[in-house]
Amino acid sequence: MRLKEYIDRIQGKILTPGIEIEDIQVTGGYVSDLLSDVMGNAREGDAWITIMRHMNAVAVASMIGLSAVIFAKGLVPEQAVIDRADTENVCLISSPLPVLDLAAILHGLLNKITESE
Image (cartoon, rainbow, N blue to C red; front, top):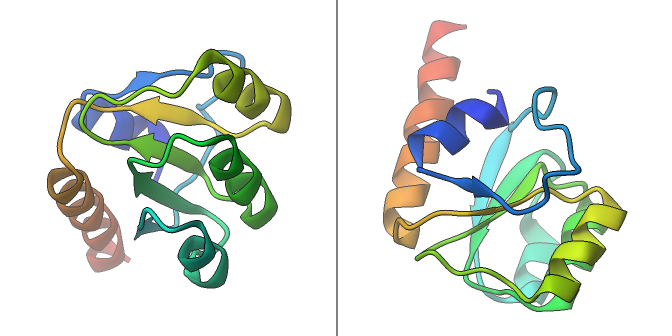
């Protein structure tokens, strides 16, 4: 699934405008606010839904190769985190929706693709 489709559905605001999102594909999703959990269980291509806005979130997303980090509830990290994400080529998105809604929408979009294959 294209990341752009998901962003449109979640009223997402791209926080890293230097990253070209047109070619980013989302192959799965992961929801957690514990960095060690994400490091051990998320997979390359996942969109990570979280409220974790720490600099280490960018490092984890970059290390795993996540498609994007989605901040729930309209949360936005500090500018230094956004700048680091831009440098690391990690797409950051903020959505006004709660975590459960973000996960449900992502799940629905991914299942729709799976069913059509």
